[in-house]
Image (cartoon, rainbow, N blue to C red; front, side, top):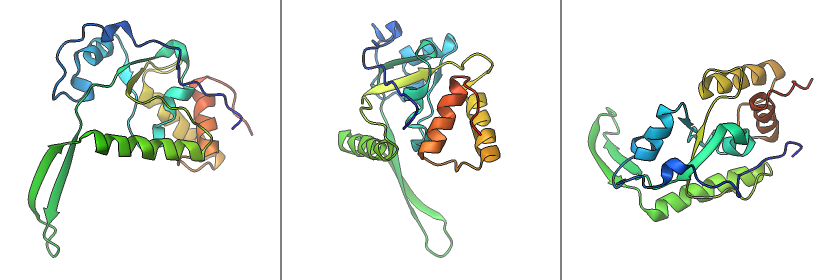
Length: 174
């Protein structure tokens, strides 16, 4: 991969994580330290697998992290095969094995595009780089440029490189 990436292994957690208070049963956006940071203009990084690489290409000065102590839930449901009516649902806490499986999947997908060493157990928060109002605006621009350049919006080297250039305000390549 031509684009350098940086997981901030030497970057300490944001000070907002100190003395964060109770977190049992709370989702990422509900954690006190995340609420503090979002009030300061930070946004949780997207958790979609497509963007698992995003913190590694995001500029350090507009990126921070806190330890991930959020609770995740998994919802299972059963449908009637003929009518597709939901017959019953069950929501349970996603335990360590489920979270490890998700992390393994992210690591495998990242390795396919040459990105390794992703630290686990972090909630990443981002601020938009200069020239953008939000993280979503940055990603919208990435999608526009991908369409213009014929780049598939999937986890592939060209998409990762394009995203890195956009977030770093680097010129487009032909």
